Length: 133
Image (tube, rainbow, N blue to C red; front, side, top):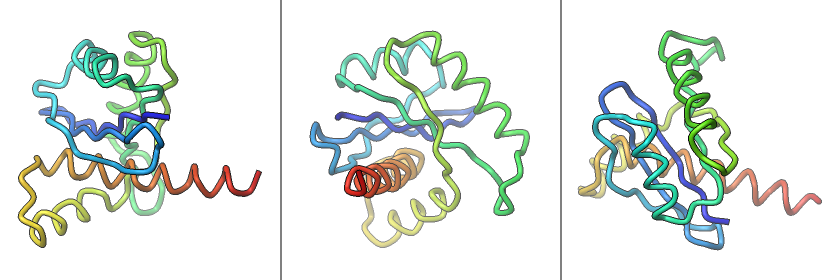
């Protein structure tokens, strides 16, 4: 299953896409400015079968102002696309993205690298769940 992951922000949306087997996560161009219609276009163009939106919760698991903005964006996105949309805990992905960029000199936007880390986490959890069934 090809999954599109999003690191939603008010300035831009970092994006990553999985390969068709749902194994590899690759950062792709960020969407700037962040618009639902553009996400829908990218999902269709990339033949995504699911969209995962990073949910920014605090370390303690509490919601923040950004969490509420992300939930509202996710709700709007669910109405705009015909594929499943879900949220996934994105704690630490921004920090991991900054570290990846420093270590590798990756050319992708940090937001898209964060989306790739988010997608890797999601795919690993899905693989574990499928292995248990």
